[in-house]
Amino acid sequence: MAQGYAGTILHVNLTRGKTWVEEPTDAFYRRYLGGQGFVGYYLLKNVPKGADPLGPENVLIFATGTITGIPVAGAGRSCVGAKSPLTDGYGQADVGGFFGAELKQAGYDAVVVYGRAAKPVYLWIHDGEVEIRSAEHLWGKTTLDTQEAIQSELDDTRVRLAMIGPGGEKLVRYACVINDLRHAAGRSGLGAVMGAKNLKAVAARGKASIPLANPDQVRELGKWMRDHWKEKSWGMYDLGTNGGLLDLSEIGALPTRNFQDGRFEGAEKITGTTMRDTILKGREGCYACPIRCKRVVEINDEEYQVNPIYGGAEYETVGAFGSNCGVDDLRAISKAHELCNAYSLDTISAGMAVAFAMECYENGLLTKEDTGGLDLSFGNAAAMVEITRQICEREGLGDLLAEGPRRAAAKIGPGAEMFVIDVKGQPFPMHECRTRHGQALGYAVSPTGADHMHNFWDASMDREPLGEDLQSLGVYEPVPQTELNADKVRAYTFVTNWQWVHNHLGHCMFIPWSRDQIVDLVRGITGWNTNLWELLKVAERGVTMARVFNMREGLSRADDVLPPRMRMPFVTETINEKPVDPEVLDENLSTFYGMMGWDPETGRPTRAKLQELDIEWADAQLD
Image (cartoon, rainbow, N blue to C red):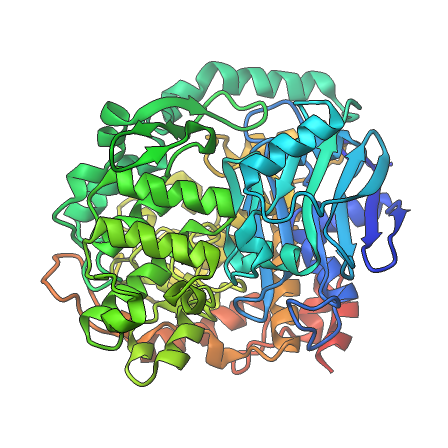
């Protein structure tokens, strides 16, 4: 058995009420590592072409990685995957917290869920055993009520859960999976897949230690990070991911009023500093991590009450419900965040749906008759919170917005599509690509639709000399942030392959390990004489499997595009903004395909590339 792993994959057929265990070979673990690699493999092997994402033929995967559950900083992450009900293509989201570590310690590296239960159920996984239990009494409950009920039923407050609230049950297309109340597998609508399967939660509790090939090496690396994290990550502890919001606004890169602008006049009121100095109650973190970057807020006033049990809003949430809706009230933003965690909604997509509706309202495409009397003007904090609640409950206009902006626009009618800011149906995260054209390419080619975590940050190339991190990957020449050429594409290709490595390992990108340290960590855990090249190839294998899945499901080059707004200037002048020329993007799309070993015209992975990546079996998926 491969060191660092439990050595078993749990399979659960909810339709038949059956479970079985797979014991993969060491070569399987080394070829796919975990996380995204497991997701791509099991989706291609088990989801039939054309399957309804909300039907029983879809498969839902909970996958840990090589580092998940190892007692070192950043080892709390795991991955959830399925065919996405938002994009009808490859769906994947990564999540922190404690559930992934608990699942691995309970004896399983992944759980692959098939079919649909006749009535609501939850899975109880503990010390190598699994039970399918009734969840009829849990259906309709928030995530907090669900966690309390299951922990009480199992008589163990240390049971960890991956679960959905009423948003997932009601099949909101961007419903997410919530771990431990405060951590979200946010993107791709995977909570809706969970709801469609009548699966309320997966509960895990494990006491087994994970075997390590070289415990002393792993221990020394863990001690190094314990002793040095403050040198590079104190800001993440102090202010969280929201620490840079004001800087983004000042340089014109903060999404504002549905990406119409890059500067927000109320930015100072919603920064990480303002949160720290006003409503912050505490800081929490993930399994074995000393940085504790998660916010915990509490509000008790006449207008808003926010329970600290749900944590607090991070940058993406503050941007989505704040600047992008024109709202400068941290209390209202925190309330919207609490609603999303309680109901299991992706805060990015929910905030983008609200901003889309606000722009439709301000342009007369939605009226007060449509909104139930709500004034959905940008900046109306109370209306933002109320329409978020309606989305959670699928009430009124919220029922339409729960389908996502692209589907909602098709119902609203002509003109509304211009206010949809998405790729492949997934709304943009809170990063403005008109100031970063490498990131624009990343949005276009992302297999999950617009995503920032497996993307490129152009500022790293806009300096001379370039940093060692880029030069050691073979990128030597600087390129301005708002230019896109072959040098930028090459850098994007190499750097984002490394970003994908984290999603295979189950490792947090915010931990300041060097690449060499991560390679050493994998060696210490597994005993493999691995290297950076091999890990990059594993990541390339994963993203290529995702590409194959998307092409099999009908997505093509025509879907690797940006929304019309990205080729338009901001409403107000911004110093760093430059619209993305679709012809330049298209030219560099061919360059990217070629560098990936995909057909430069269609983006189809070539047989030779699949052979090189040792996944020639995937070629049959494209016949």
